[in-house]
Image (cartoon, rainbow, N blue to C red; front, side, top):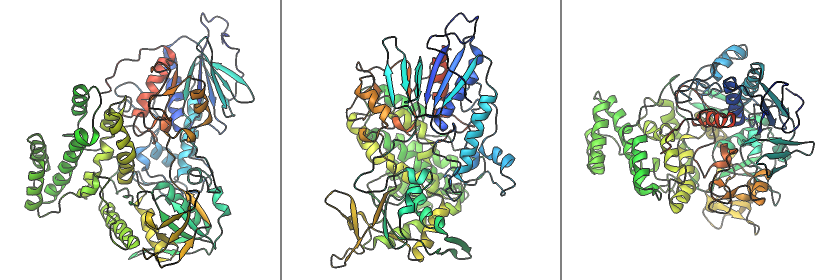
Length: 602
């Protein structure tokens, strides 16, 4: 929706007593859309005129979920768990906006294409359509005192005036705003030395894969969601087909697939998303609770040691879920067993009691690898076979479902307790050293545990390995060039085996937003001009002004603040507390001068 902009300080209506509130939103994917939705929903509570300037070179809404990407690129969140309409639960008790969640929208607009299930992983392009539709609904329902202007240009510079405004420049225009939210999403990596850039290849059109020839040996650095998208683009995207057989999945090559070598920096596999029943809600935490985190933060104002003070709580919570489900499957009370685990934790007898329960139920102890990122599951001499065996075991557990697999129930703690983890980490909750350990080792570990591919993707990966197209190689088998980029792989640990040169290498993992070189230009310009600073240097840490305080009229949300807060890479949902919606609501209330209220964050 394009409207002409008023001049800075101009009243947007003849009779208004005060100048209009001028707001800028840079980037309008899912996170920017939540901020816009909240501004428009709350605007009816003020008599002021409000002008919202949305800057995005793409149509607002979809962001990385482009509507024209292939339908074989799938979401890794089931349809019923995604919603752009915050209900009261999502807003922590505040009144939200009524509207369909993603599953309900698909029933309305996609039923003619296929039978849609609430617990199904649907095409990412469909989510893009849903986000675009949501933006249209917000615009159609604008209050009379609000105008929204979409500037279809990227902001390339931001200046801070002596009057406290921000002036956004696009090359086409300059726009002054009183309040600014930057929600540009994932940092874009720099390409160098001929290495194909990512993660854009996996999240948009996969266009950079067109240059890969069928006769080439391709290295894919990464084993997670982005890597699975790249593999799909080089196989199904080139005419190959998967068929389901009674004993598994088979791949019929299209004839244009390259040979693919998969590796990662850690060498550790991702676990797949288990089957879940529709509208399932997570169990309430018994040990790793919000109150437990609040107590730890209060007792340790200088910061927590994650491994010494927090991880034991998480491990105890996992043991409660693990043995609680085993007990239930044996006909005993899960509630009673969980209470025994909690009592053992507080009496410092957790290891003893968990060993006793393993013997009592004739069950394996909880695998240390679910909470310890330093435990390898692929130590066998034949790495490829170890990876295959690990994937097969994990897929079998995913097929059992979240309500029938004790190991998946334990792992789910990483997901169900994300808000507890955020409150551990946010606002410098960890010591400097422990913060680096958490984001360097535990945050990637959590992604491998609960933010991995769909089980269908790993079944397809096994079929591709059977077809001789995909090969797993250990990190030590990757030979790097003098410039540091992967250049070849050794097909065996035997040093006498010839090397396989790699004609193309695709870094299929999301860049680290804490790396200042990968930050968007506007963030780097804000840093260079002194408007924001990094507390820890090098782009890492909370973005503040030169006195260590937050800019009162500037917000930066989403993946860019990963490292200052925890887990910002997700699409919002309703039905339970949603940090994305709560943050957006608070931003909107502060912009509009409404009562924000106080919410404890520790």
